[in-house]
Amino acid sequence: MRRLLTSTLPFLLLLALYFVAYANPQWRYDATAAAENTPLPEVVALLNEAASPIEAIAFLGPNSIGRPSTELYLDGLRAASPNFRYEIVDPSLNQTLALTYAAEEGLIVFILNRGTADERTADLYFLGDRDVYAALLQLIYPSQKIAYFVTGHGEPDLLVFDDFGLSEASRQLEDLGFITAPLDLRTSGGVPEDADVVALVAPQRALSAEEMAALGDYAAGGGSLFIAADVLPSPEAERAEQAAVAPYLQQTWGLTLRPDILIDPPLTYFEQVFTFIIQDFGESPIITADVRQFSLLLSAARSIQISPLDEVQVVALLRTSPNAWGETDLNTFPPVQEAADTAPLVAAVSAEHGEGGGRLVLVSDTDWMLNRGIFSGGNSIFLTNTFNWLAGDEQTLSLTPRETINRTLVLTQTQILSLQIASLTAAPLLFAIFGLYNWFSRRYKR
Image 1 (cartoon, one colour):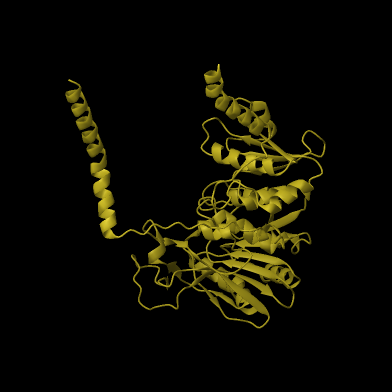
Image 2 (cartoon, rainbow, N blue to C red):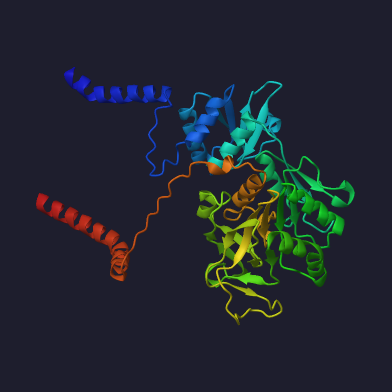
């Protein structure tokens, strides 16, 4: 009897501990070095401010790639706040619920006041700290931020879903509480008073003097402009830029879009000469830790020349490596560097006007924000950060950054060679030792 108790007691204790821990999910220990599975304090505080519990439904099948990491993150939220609960739903098995929330595989829906007339939802596909915080903020303290996109001059369309549309950019912004809408300045009579941001993305035809004056008056009155340019594809596009946008940028902000194309050999992306990675960033609320972590991918960008004006504060947001140059001969391929530019060169800037308080972000490329490029690296994060900053929503940008743990193993050539030899010989050697041991054991037993 004593032996039975001795052998079963440890098992019973472990079983009891398991059930106690299962009943208390708030008992957690995050063993990751940067506490990656523990919610940020700001996220927990925001959860606790909700008047009623916030629920999350993660539409994930049993074999979904993102299911383990999603469960870990949601477990952390549930353990950190009694005001949060979640469930995992297979959309193929519960199609009614999936249709109710227009959900597809991978969608996580955060819900406040579920089942009531005041039900609010926020959709996410990625559970990053900043995205979750922005979604919760929009649920608990709903606010209306409106971003207008200028149309009528050949700009990319918000409702086009092919590679060259802005439908994904629009969805990303709407997930964070923006309303995106087209704006035709030819018929609107000016910028609407409810505009938080006005975006002008690669117009192919010139804006009229009246349209450009409307944008200038809006920014001079404290408004925020987002302007994205592109490599000039035709003389018509060049004339359009020089007729309207270029003079405004030079005279009001001290910025010039140079007629070149950036080439950065050390950071070229898979031998695509005009596509390169951005790893050098300026100091700005827009450039958060996750932007630095994931980097950006630009394609066919131009350089921006900064001519400082007393009343304008400019920050170079995106810079090339010191080995880059701006190629002006667009008819020769492959391009050859003839004269050295003063590198690093600038591909994007933010600016604040001291007189009127207006804000501007100028990016010399559009591919990064089109449907075909927005999910590369940290492009989507840079987009949402930019629009939040322009809209004056810097609360979302000021979250406590997680500590980045860099682990580097430096090996000498001799050590690398030793590892290679060991990887080739270790397994056969172990089998040989095991075989010899068995052979000697059987021989001596006889």
